[in-house]
Length: 180
Image 1: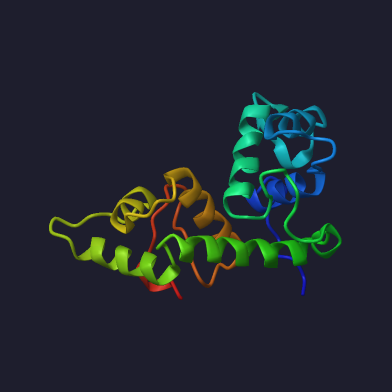
Image 2 (image 1 turned 90 degrees about the horizontal axis):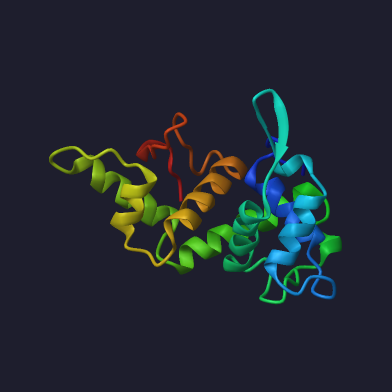
């Protein structure tokens, strides 16, 4: 299966890079791993500002490391929970990442079915409530942090666009395009 064509700076590609570089024999904590990734000035962690290419700070990179631990693709020692040989190719990694995110959401009462129900509920509120990720997160009453919930939604929408789709830059979840 061919990998989903996501931009080089998308979350799945950043997490892939984090997972491939992580090594508990070399990095004793997430900060040391983030510093190493930042020092490499990788394309996945680049952005453009003022017509110059800039790179993410270690602090920004630690968010991807923490998320990777939270969803169970890295353990507390920064060890990948899957064989790196099995996920070094992007298509295998994306499939594994998508599955891990889905399990993470389901385990924390935020399955796609629950997201759809919360979205429909917000649409039926009086007065009408726009189902932004913040409002859906509040409606779900999940223990997942808002930032991890957003990251999970971005990953699912990128890797499984028929299951979940965002509309516009301001994220709005539409009920007719959420499929469980």
